[in-house]
Length: 309
Ligand SMILES: [Zn+2]
Image (cartoon, rainbow, N blue to C red; front, side, top):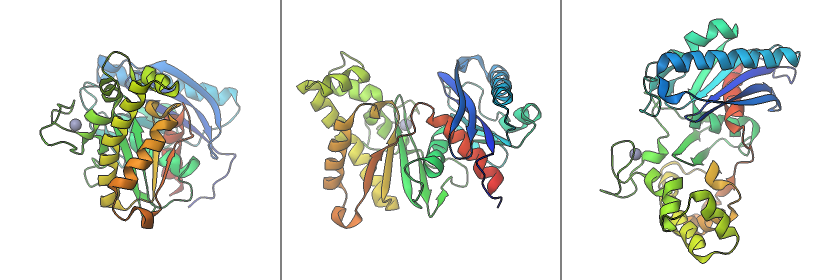
């Protein structure tokens, strides 16, 4: 293992279905530079790969202007990733053609440094381990709540990926047998009951999740009840994960946690009822404080892990 030094810098790209965030990150998690570009998500594999290359060149230029020499490139992407080959093992139709994309092989010649690729939700968990709330934790679960529901689990100090790299599909754990249809083609997945659309639905469907949260903060009774209902379903799902893994720390991230402290309170109350031996477990439940560029920090953390392990 190499000694970590804060003079080390990393290129980092977070490829999301809507936006690509990227920048240069110092070893201690300081963002030296950061930018956002729209992702051509529907344009297919070749277009996505050339988009990534363009973004990588822009990040390299940022590093040049900051007068630092990056030692690795990290990429966080939607879809499941084989971290050994840096190729996408499986992606849904949110990114058509992305399954099988050899991301690391394509980007390495441009980066000129080692390239690490990881699933975006897994990368967020790695960011929490390196820079966030999980720095001192060996076991924790990081759950992202937004358009979708994703997550990453650390077990015994390591990110659990599974033999096919498909682990941590927290959003697609069945919550309701024969329940509402999910984007994955199945029914009753946690995601359908705990994503942004679900919160809007519990509120009656007339306004978006962001507006529901704002209204709840202003004391709107319907909105507050919607958040309670949301916490009820999410709590049931998280209780299942706690029962499986005995995680002592749950970190929640994503758009639905923004300015939404009511959810944290409701969720804690829900878990205290749903989780057996709650007083003995002393589970810590908290929001991520990594902010808007958490995914970029995650990509950097994955790159750090790759060259320092
Ligand atoms: Zn599903």
